[in-house]
Length: 110
Length: 118
Image 1 (cartoon, chains in turn purple, cyan):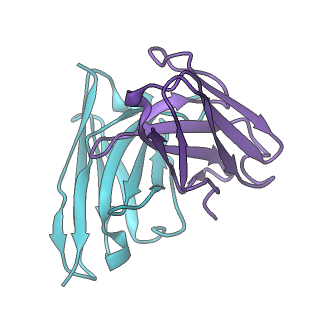
Image 2 (cartoon, rainbow over the protein chains, first blue to last red; image 1 turned 45 degrees about the horizontal axis):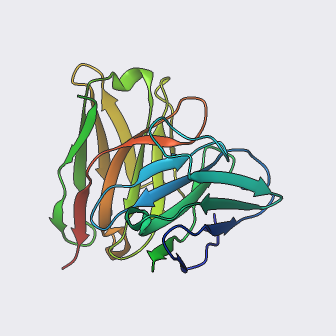
């Protein structure tokens, strides 16, 4: 199973919005509404930010939102804050009890 | 407190074996879908395996036939038996709990480092 495609980096200034894309295929992103997004600070375990394309777990700020169009999912971070600087990973169910992750995007808050 | 604590990582030679443990507290492993995810040094996340409440297990192609996921309900603990280890298995291994209704991974352990090297 091939990894999902994410841009290696993204950046924005405090208060701005940034969108990170996650491109797969009809076999994963396009075929299921089981896209999740994770935030990982250096040296820490990942944290779930979005599940089922656009749902936020309790405690995740509403500045984080998710969407999907065709084979591409997106994570938008609005009102960027310094603590948002981290690596972000998407994942998608890929059928046959398999999960695939994206390569990760390093978000820099300028 | 709801948490997962992994142990058992370390240095092992290529072709060797290692067993990772994941002790859960604050919830019951047997009624949850549990999974392992790994991350090679400086690299991205890679899904490894899942065990369902039924006890059924599934694996990524990269570890199929070499890794075995099991659980001990009396100890509320997961085990990942890793055999025929290769250099490319070097990674931090995270034990995690996913939602039962979707593939969102909602709870992660702190991870344990496995290094495969001679």
